[in-house]
Amino acid sequence: MSLFLTEITVADQSRSGVETLLEVLAVTAGNAGGSLLDAQVSQDLDQVFAVIEHEDQSALATAISDHGLSATEPAEVRLVGATIEEVREHATGGEYLVEWDLPAGLTMDAYLARKKEKSPLYAEVPEVTFLRTYVREDLGKCLCFYDAPDEDAVCRAREVVGAPVDRLHRLADQTPARQP
Image (cartoon, rainbow, N blue to C red; front, side, top):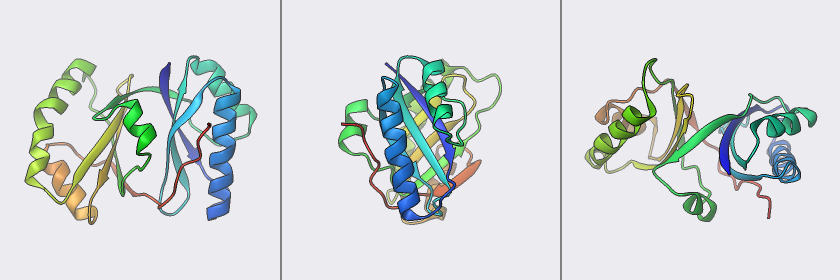
């Protein structure tokens, strides 16, 4: 199965509204023949970043649309820095999410080589732990998850590896809904 990222704008920005949305998303993914792998919520409860395992991007997009979710078109992503099993076992998104709009002309091979070369440099900022990245296969952007004491620490870690921060989100404390 492939992994697809969809970003959902939350209408009911209450804790219960987000929990309901995550449950609907998990059921929607399951009913469409897939499963919700990872769902992280911004601290202000206005945005959900969801990664769904599915075989058919079009069918998934239709299922999401049919449920009236205000979501981006599912984009195929590659998981880097963790395995699917690790994500299933440790569903935390960390404390921070960095969105990086990747530069035009970058290839997946070049991105992965750069990631491999630069990742050891995170040791220079020991208070920050890199958890995982979802990089869109079309290289439109990537989402990188971190545990860190504050936004400044995340920005220092990104500087050390030479990667910009286009958008930085503090994540809400939550346990994502899952399809059994």
